[in-house]
Image 1 (cartoon, rainbow, N blue to C red):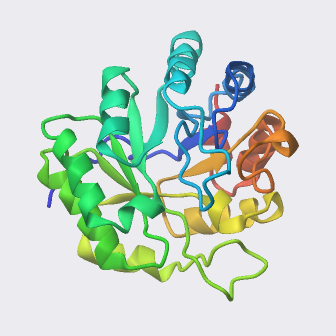
Image 2 (cartoon, helix red, strand yellow):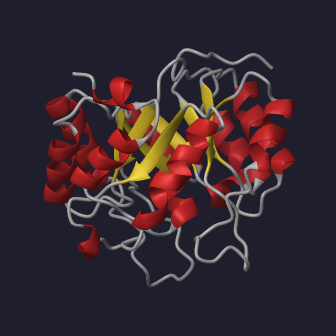
Length: 261
């Protein structure tokens, strides 16, 4: 399986933005602060949020795509959001969203992934695929292969850790061996790390990020919110744009590339 290796090659590829799009002002103000520096490559925000309980905040829906487009136009930065079904995928394509990611809850279901792959047939939009919640590497590789079989070769894996009852104080088990196993199955794959979901707390994001770079991962996806304590989802693990700047600047051997104007 051959993949394009030009999207994140030879650079720490940084995706940052809030877990969820909540209001237009929240999105634009967060993007404004993030884009003051040149180290962020892509702005992220969840438009549709898969939640365990039906009464929890499940995202603003398609109106949030307009906010992402405004970020894209105002700050000249690509934007990305999560999709979990065909309708959401089609909405992103119709609204010229630059990139999409498939979340851990969707990766576990080959039927959902295949349906998304069918929509993406012949489309070269970059697709990021998170590992499944319970750490099945073959299931992760299978999801990537389904997207690849649609004709799309612009695929990047996201390592976000795995659910475990024994990973305290982290939210998820880092399970770094998955990286080695995925690389054996898919030698051409590029991988970035989601330290926010592994950590579950700002105080662990730096060490998890450093470990990701030590393992030669290609970048990071970090949840960043203008007011994390007011966030409607994942409030405990998001950081401010200023904290993001300080965190990235602290990573060994990355500062010149990340902070260069």
